[in-house]
Length: 449
Image (cartoon, rainbow, N blue to C red):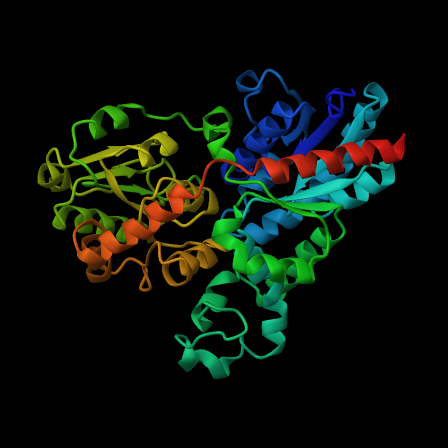
């Protein structure tokens, strides 16, 4: 214990049951394990991680309503509310059992959206640390939304000023604020306020990001959230997401990329949760065909509404693209983005994807579907200038223009140079921040002994 004070201390982690939340939590678990901590993973039975991929952890299932979870498609905040109330009892029960069998539990790390877990850990005397699986800038944006609502930014009077900047929240535009809420404005603001307040009650805050990217927002964060904060990303530079993926990766995509020219391929993937209608999917398909740019397109089963996989594609599409395009169900994304033939990434702007693209110096075309994706895409295009945000959804002319700019024109080369300069600053996760986090976790246990 003298050489490594974290040795034999156990940290319990609880992710939300979705790929974009499971991946960073399992990566963080591996990082902490490498620093000497024992790891227990509490997880929902929906989208359960595979214990065989991480045999050095202990896994504990939290039961819950599978049918109810599946009914919340498209209403993320309602789903978060359900999980908070459905899981709180089972979490408390599981923690109680773990405490009865392990003497050295130091703390619990939960997804920030599991705000009700604070009550469970307080009942049992365990400190709670929050992991934000989103960008730091998007967290601040969400925290500011209720204030902006009070200032009238959601009133009908602003309908004619959708392109106007939001001076209180640069680089936002009014339309970005309108895009974030899901169904009911009142419910959205109430949920956001609850999540923000739940974060403030935690003992510490972790972000999967790095200071060179988000330093301008760090001082603002510390002013409004005066609790220990650790930026220890990018997690995936230390541990790959492959061990926590519940989707099967098609490695034939790498063999296909090997046959393509340097920086010539546009990689297209909208993550594990986004959905789109068949009309927009067909517009994308013909856009990819008409630009005559080589592309690798991930069409996940369930991406296109009302279809099993590719039956919505016109019959002539495959003939038109010939050998120039390759379509798969799921890709080893980190390996794809690091491949020398990939010159651009058309993404849904989920934080894991944006961070992986930044780390490989790949310029982005940003579509956004929900939540923090709207914030990430605005920052990529307007603040960090690492890509182009599609402002009109899936309008053919804008999509084709963005592909030309990223893959062919001088503007794309300028973006690529900025991305590569930022890439050079990324050496892996921050060991200094990790050591500080480890010291804090050890102090939790010491204060309870």
